Length: 314
Image 1 (cartoon, rainbow, N blue to C red):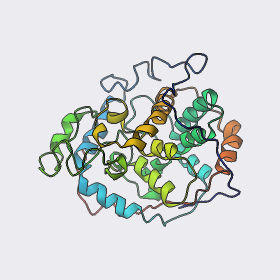
Image 2 (image 1 turned 90 degrees about the vertical axis):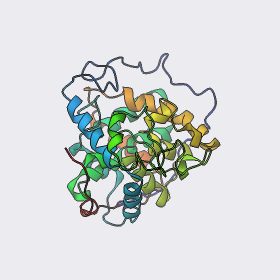
Image 3 (image 1 turned 45 degrees about the vertical axis):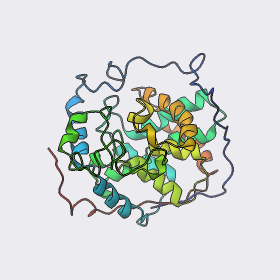
């Protein structure tokens, strides 16, 4: 799929500083409870989604191996199957509800707009961050039939490195014991096939919408800044940005970009709400941002990409 934009302009980018903080005093208040009345990211709360979420992570942790990720990256880097605009792509997410999310069961286009609008309110001059929020989850289209109907465990949920030991900070860690890499001496040490300070760009992450959307943007010349690309690729990497796991792989650029990811994460998480954004009201603003960015994005969807392999599905 090619996402085509015309009349590229320039986004406003502020250099990340050590004192970047979430705007909370006078800005958007952070809610204490999610849409179901529970704490955010509470994977034990019985909200009607607990079993769905746990089943998702069980399948993910068993099937996301080093070899699987390499196969997915090789297949999807072709980016050669269809063409559409970014807003059209956003609208496809009306048909996607994230099975890994204990905090929201609304279509994903609402999540994109809720997070983008919350950031826009508190960071009105950082339009690159507004656009990053709008597109950060576009890769979830991979679950749709026209993009191959990948199982949700291969598209959504917290991400983690493969090729090294699975840190215990990962949600539902117990299911990794059934992953073929768990007992493989090549992959089950702290650093595995990587070296300290190698940079996250050199670490294979579990396959999903994050890495896919990063690949789409990188391969097709987006003008988003490095921090925006980092957010797209690692926003689901909760073991790192919440618990500090796998930080031994970070280089200096990763550490600098992490400052913006931590800003973004508050809005990505706490903006989830049953109060829906008026799509038509905000659409003109985001279309104006899209027009500023050089972003020729080729998406790949191949219905046979999963079928040659056998995975655990309960």
